[in-house]
Length: 163
Image (cartoon, rainbow, N blue to C red):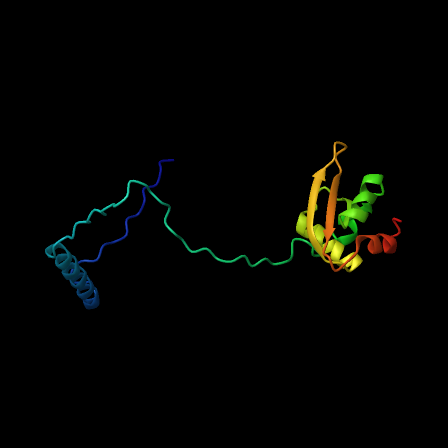
């Protein structure tokens, strides 16, 4: 069997075309002619004032998550009870309590001087003049808390139970 050839669609002659089609073609032709006649504007080159190229600023939307990534808010782990671990009761610490109005504590390694000061104020109801810290050779942090003249370190030590 020989392959069948494709049947071509009959083309309309000028007489058979609808009068509306001719109007559309002329409008399109006029539009193209107008575009060809008008001058083509060439792109102007951007003048760069700097040798560095910076990424263009784009729209940055705020995050709007569908659900929270954590079910609960994280608690601050260094509270006053964790910052101050225990008072030091050595002879040299007792001497500092009696003579220099200073309490000596072992504190958390991550505790800062302002946090130590705040923890002592909250736990023992005394105000600190200043806090000195050092890290001992065994890796623990020791804090020397000097009290103001309004408070006596001996009284505070009695309340704590050191003496």
